[in-house]
Image (cartoon, rainbow, N blue to C red; front, side, top):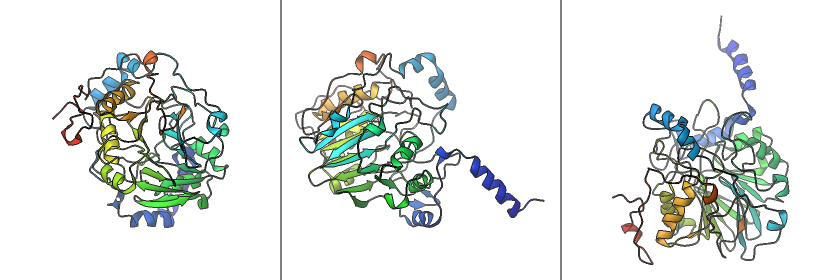
Length: 399
């Protein structure tokens, strides 16, 4: 005979077998707050614009492209990625301009802003996976050991996917005394991994918190969430605007293009620098990741419609997560940014730079890029004047 009483021990046992990397589901007052969110409806968090979160098109066609030998070769570098030999000395001296960014690979960025140090989406693990023996593996080593990074004032998480929220990294940071700013619901994972609740700031979209002298605002994004076998959509995803006394920066997290970038820019910008996701795009999931062309559009929307500040492409180069050639996000970003006169920073992983100074522009990926050209939405050359009217631009070469 089975009943509710006999099922509870089974559920408890299954919960104990669940890998720690799956994290924890929101419960109690955290779940009650989620249900009160204006962005939560019909039992799940909603996107600001409709988005298909599951792959579209033919599964057979996707599998064919994924496993085809020629395609697989194109998705990885042909040699060692030239990582900048970052040392503590590189980032120990305060930036001259008051703002310095160090891209650690993928979406991980150390931002030094007005005397404070903010670490976005830190992933120091070897794989973005719940398992140490399977899943996408790093294509280059971390530029600097986490223990050598120095003190961090705030750790910012955009959402709970494995390539943005990494269990071993969070456990290492949990003992440092830093505070965490995360989207609504993500705090359940952090507490499960040992981060004290009083060091977690959990925000809904358009909510802000002041931490260690800077203001952090969770802003909308067009994506989805989930780590376990059941994707309940009970943790929010976000982009982030960070404001100091003198500077403003923006980190997109993962997002598809949507009309809300202009609103974010009007409210929190213009920004001295943006860190924009431009990799892992595909025609199989066009609504939840941006192409480089869409990433440039997003940056310009955030800046009031005109080229301004520095744009740094992120979410590429470190993990093989899509079908496009490994270096295409960088090459495509160079194309579209150059066409409109937008300053583009393309640092090597681990290479610090100041957005208010000379931007790193060396195409370091080309010697190890292999094939770059891709068939999907490759932009055509543009003929633009010095101050383009964005309403008239067709960056994808399509009308």
